[in-house]
Structure formats: structure tokens, C-alpha cells
Length: 282
Ligand code: SF4
Ligand code: SF4
Image 1 (cartoon, rainbow, N blue to C red):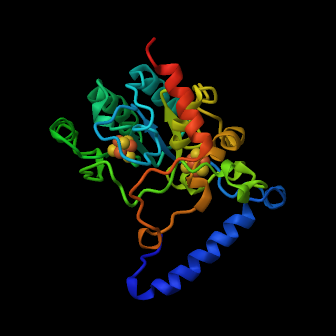
Image 2: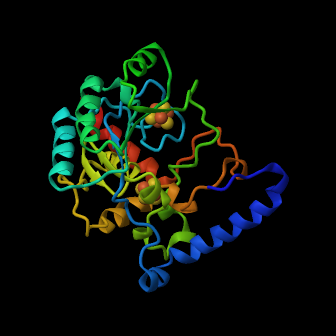
């Protein structure tokens, strides 16, 4: 992403308006038929959501951690399978990121990291990175225990309001401007952050896995997808609900309005109500 200086803000505004116009054109069904999907899932980068538990419940969290709270953790056996399958099939990951929820709250966090280091010991060029909110003593203690070869991306959050977040719960399928969109186009997250693995399976990206959790976990692949597989059917189904689909690419913070409330479109209101209906204790 380019460095955007305030002095040249007017210029970058024009550039990103042009990119937005191109994105809108690019995701139309006829353009997609002609050019194929704009973004497909990565073969080199993966994000693993090991838990949906978090000690912050940020507004507009794109894993619905605040909107639909549950202590759903990835079994260590699933992490072991991921490592074993990657090694057996000769998959060379460039980066494995461990996220959630707040990953350090996984009850077997240290063990999960050890299992993943089993992969990076064989492939030392692969970056193993923990993405954390850095909030609270428990989290800090878990980060302090990490071996030196594990990278840490610490956002140092201090509260629930994250003005730099985007409106994740504004589903494009609720917006008439997207009536001709082909959602198989996905967005830059699938390419630049990587494909996703969650307690429910493999997805074009981890955000898509978080969406499927709210839908009831119907779309996760149970085995590591083959190289030929773009997971387009999953993108078609899940990206229609994702606010990230709108921009499609990363937009520098200074060009985005600050977001201090939670915006929720009608389809998401219904999906969260259904989820709460399924998870309420009788
Ligand atoms: S810290 Fe991250 S995972 Fe937790 S609620 Fe905030 S955005 Fe979601
Ligand atoms: S639109 Fe959302 S669900 Fe689809 S690839 Fe992008 S971030 Fe993932």
C-alpha cells in the first residue's frame, strides 16, 4: 500500500475514487465472465483463527466476536492435521498467522504454537506470526512466553471502539448497487492476508470462516484444498455478506471516515437474531 502524505491527500483521493469506480465495474457479472475473478485465495499465506473467544468485544469486529459471543476453540488435533497435510503435500507457506478472537485466550495456546513450530522448523523461511490485541495481563503473559522465532503483531487495543475499522456488517447483498455483483470476485484480503482456517474448516479467507460460523458452519472444507481449487463457490456464498467486499482493496486510513458506531444491515440483523435463537439456553 502506498504511503499517503496529508500534503498529497487531494491526489490520493482522486486515485482511490478511480480505484473504487474500477472495482465496481470489475465485480459486475459480465466483467467477471470476461476476465475471471478479481481476487482468488492465496496459496502462500494462511490465517488461522484458533478461537472466537476475546477479552474485547469491539464494534464492527469482522469475526462477529462481540455480536455473537461464544468460546469456540480450534482443537489441537486440527492444527496437527494442518501441519501434517502441509508437510506431506509439500505446501510451502510463506506466512502462517495465528488469530482469533484473541488467540492467546485459547486454553492450549502454547501447545498450538509448538505444533505450528513443527512446520517452521522444516520450513525456516516461513514466518509464524501471532496477531493479538495486547489487552490485559493474561494476554501479555502469554506473549512473553512466546519463543523468539515467533513474530508478534500487537494492535495494543484499549477499548471497544475502533475508528479505523470498516463497516463489516453492511452486507453488499442488502445494497441495490450490488444487484449485478458476482461475489466470486472476493477481495484483496483473500490474496494479501491469505486463505483461512477456522474451527469450522478451510475458507477463501478467515473472515469468510467467521461469517460461516454465524450461518451455522455449513461451508468449511474439512481438508486442505488442492492447488487447483480457488474456493470460488465459498466466496460466492460468503462474500455477499461481507462489508469488505465493497472497497475490495485496502484503502489508507486517512481516506476512510472514522467509524465510532456499529452499522448493521437488515440481513445481518436477521442472521444474528437466528444465531442468538440457536444459542440461547431454554
Ligand atoms: S480484539 Fe480483535 S477479535 Fe477481539 S473483538 Fe476486537 S477486533 Fe474482534
Ligand atoms: S469479501 Fe470478506 S469474506 Fe470475501 S474475501 Fe474479502 S474479507 Fe474475505
